[in-house]
Length: 344
Ligand code: ATP
Ligand code: MG
Image 1 (cartoon, rainbow, N blue to C red):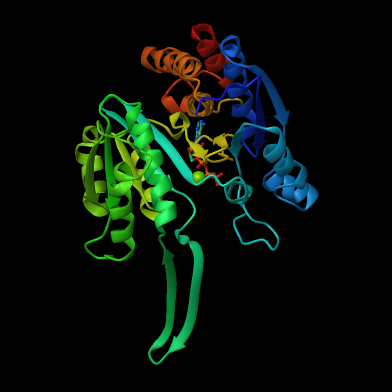
Image 2 (image 1 turned 120 degrees about the vertical axis):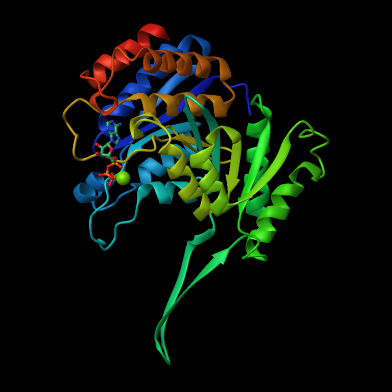
């Protein structure tokens, strides 16, 4: 939604590891297109594992309050996770998604023959984490509850249709397993299918084609013929798997952006993690974060500046002259940032 804003307030949360190296790069990309944006205001915020070890909280009150009351959007770097469960620690990204109601995870994936967006429902399904373990007659029995609601399926469906409208092919593929889970996946499928018929939508999605696919065959076809997909929409768990599988179609994790989006807030986040193996070496690929910044702008309704950033990144990737080691190059993070900025 494009709103007439007098300023664009962006929270910056580099968090851990290479997040601290790539979020400043994304900030520079935003500054480079600032002439075409409302006045940019940045807020430096802390969260994450390092923050937890220092302060005892992974997501300080001040960070969440600033995001809620002072920001239109945010960029999040990456969070390291402890190898064992630590009492009192829970991932700040999960907390932020809840508190800001970021119900959609959106991941565009582009490569030579691929141009798709995976839209993952982010609040329910098996992720409600209702599990039980009992000892039955033949040993332990573990159960998990899976929640699918009409409300969540409808809003994620609508997000997928809206995204499809802005794309040349305008196709939504619903991912489900309703041949086995006819009640839960059946509800997801029917609800998403029903989005174009909702009251108030008024033929808005008439030009969008609806396809659907059983999740297992969707993964198979994702590897065999990824070009068939445009917008894929899926419940949380299938979406998790599909979006990582789709990211594998691209050369490096260092290229894949995402946003966590709700109706009133959007947070850009590179798909990669904190990459402790290359932390502090100045060689992290900044392109996933720069693309996340562009995606964030696009979601806020600033398609022009978003295109300029994306086109600059695409040109740098296509030319292949200046690349970080994950893409086979010898350049630093800063070299790549400079190359992108030159072209914005
Ligand atoms: P985490 O627990 O934070 O997810 P991880 O060890 O799983 O950390 P990832 O960040 O997921 O690390 O990265 C997996 C691999 O991909 C690592 O070898 C990492 O160096 C590499 N990688 C990830 N992101 C980038 C990037 N932006 N630039 C270069 N290499 C990257
Ligand atoms: Mg990882």
